[in-house]
Length: 583
Image (cartoon, rainbow, N blue to C red):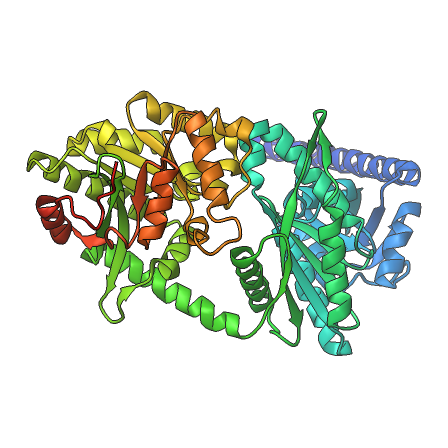
C-alpha cells in the first residue's frame, strides 16, 4: 500500500504559483499566435492589394534584398538593373537598415528616368522585411519646377532657368568647340504703355512679345523673360557673326508690327545687346555682363537697333562706374555748383529769367562736361538726388537775389525723365518752394520736347498739377522732336524754347529762319511765349526781333555765370547800344 502524501500549506502555495505561470505562458502563446496570424493576414492583404496597386510596391529583407515586387515596381528594378533576390543599390540598402533600426516609416525621393517617385520605407512589426510603397509625384514636381523656373505671365523660362541653361549650353560648347550667342532684349519706353493704358495692357504686350520672339528661334535655342521688360535669347551653335546678326534683325523685325490690345494698335520697339562665346568671354556671368553692356551702349546711342559687345566697352563701363562713384562722393562733398545764364526779354530790354545749369568741379579733372556725367547720373538714378539739389539750390539762390532787390525774375531748372516718371515730382517741387520761401511764379521747369511727347497724357497731367500752384513750365529744344499739335495745345505750358540748331540757320539757310518763324507763330497762336536759345550774333537778334520773339538766351547776351558773377551782372546791368534795338 502506497502511503498517501500529505499536502502541507507550503506545497499548496507552490502549486498555485505554478498554475499562474502556466496560465500566463498560455496567454502569451495565444497572443503571439494571434499576432502572427494578424501579421500574415496583413502580409497576404498587402500582397493581394499590391498587384492591383498602380504604384510600385516592394518587399525587401532588412539587409536590402528584394523579396517581392508588384508589376509597377518592375520599372524600378529595371532602373536599378536588379531582379528579385538581388540587393537594392547601396544607398537604398542603408535606408532600409536605418528604417528598420528606428522602426519608423521614412520617405525618400527617386528620379527614375523621367518620373519622380516618393518611396516610403515601412518596417513591419516582428518581421524580417521592410515594405516599400512608391508614389508617383511627377506632376507635382513639374508644377514646382514651373513655379520655380518659369515666368508666370509669359510661360517662358525665368532668369534662374535661363542662367542654368546657359551653363549647360556653354559646357557643351566647350567640348564641341561651337559658338554660342546671347541676345539681351530690352523694350524701349515700355513704362509708357503701363502709364497710359494700364498694367493689364502692359502684361498683354509682354505675352505677345514673348510669343513673337519664340517664333523667331529654333527649338534648340532658349527664349526667356529675364525680368520686367527684358528678354534673353540663347542662340546655340550659330555659324558665324552674320548668322547671329540675322537672328537679331529677325527678332527686331518681329516686333515692328503693332500688337492689338483692347482694340488699340500698340507699337513696341526694342534694343538688343549681343555677346559671343568664346570670343568675348567664357564664364556665364561675364557673358551676361557683356551682353548687358552692349545693350545699354546701344540704347544710349541709338535705340531700336542691335549692338555687338566690343572690348572697348569694358573701358567705358569702368569709366562710367568711376564717374558714378565720384558723383556719389562729390554730392556729399559739395563739389557740384550752379552757373546761371541770363535771358533777355527783347521788347522790354530787361532780364526776366535765367537758366540754372549744373557744373561739377571734379577734384582731379576740374570742371567736367555735363554731357559726360549727366547720362551716367540718369542711368544710375543719381539724377534724383542731384536734380533735387539743383532745384533747392536754384530756388534758394533766386530767393536771396529777390530779397536783395534784384528781381523778381524766373529761374529755370531742367528736368530728366527719371525725375518725371519715377518720383513724386509735384510733392518735391512743393516741398522745395515751402522750404526756400521762393514764390512759385519765380520757378520755371524745363522738359525736352521728346521727353514730353514720350508719354504725353501723363506729362499733361503732371504739368497741370504743377501749374495749379503757380509754377511755369516750358518745352526745351522745340523742333527737334515729334510734337503733335493736338497734344501741344493741351499742354499747360507757358513757354517754348527754339533749339539752337534752328537759330544757327538764320543767315545761312536758303530759307533763313523758316523753322524759327513757324515755331514762333505756332507758339503765339497757343498763347505761349517764345525763347530762342543759342543766340550768338546781332543778325540773329535782329531777325528774332522781327518775328516778335519774346526772349533770347545765348553768348551774344551772356555766357553762363557763377552765382557771385551773376549777382554782380544783375546789379550792373544797363541797357547798351549793343542790345538796344530801335522800336
